[in-house]
Length: 316
Image 1: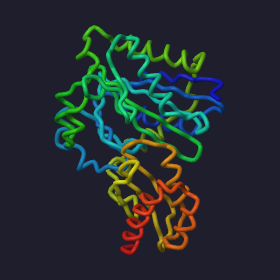
Image 2: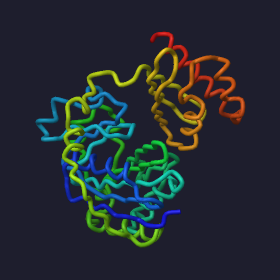
Image 3: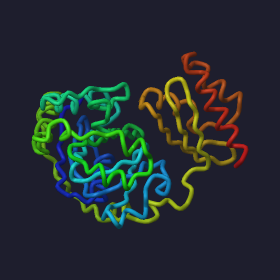
């Protein structure tokens, strides 16, 4: 149960600082609490941690548009931020983590502003069949991060110049396209009220550490461009529950570490994949033992993932 909600209101628009701040609270969540953060970034392209900068971004336009290039800790599509985008994050432990509850807080806030939004089946908030939000997720051990962007008055022309993926460029809609008289301050006020309605009294929390080292890490060439391949193998499969991308570090056909990206975020499915594959030696007998007690409706999909990993492991 969440006993306290701590609010971090970042007035820094440097995206490297805000990524460092997110990471700090992700690793320093107070017990039985949730940290909720709001911030804006200056002109920025934020690449998912599983994506190639060169494949996702028009590099030559970055300097022309005076835009920062950043890499997030979360996986998923590349997004554009400017001062017309309001970012939010829910940071908490796994026992309190519920994506539907969290996105519903944002949804209810926008509904109270009389914006005719609705939730799609991927827990994104939509308006006129376009996205008002983009949400991303990260779980590590018992720590959970749910972060998202609300398109209030984003510069869609600049966004289109910087992002390569056509779907990412064209699928968003700004709140101001529905009602140009809704101001940023009103959106922020309603979100905080919605947080209080759902979770109770909000307490401010002040950062007591110098983040300079973490900021420099996020702005480093090594981190942003990742010139060295970070994974031994990468496999992608279309499963019954979602398209899945598995990123594995392996040695001698044993999985040492894995990251999982689901096109349709589902924490229970992620946990299931981790339970089956984490630290596993690629061996048919071992795999059969691991899925013996798994619900039969998931076994064929897990077998597809196993066969893909097995095939790639022969190339190591």
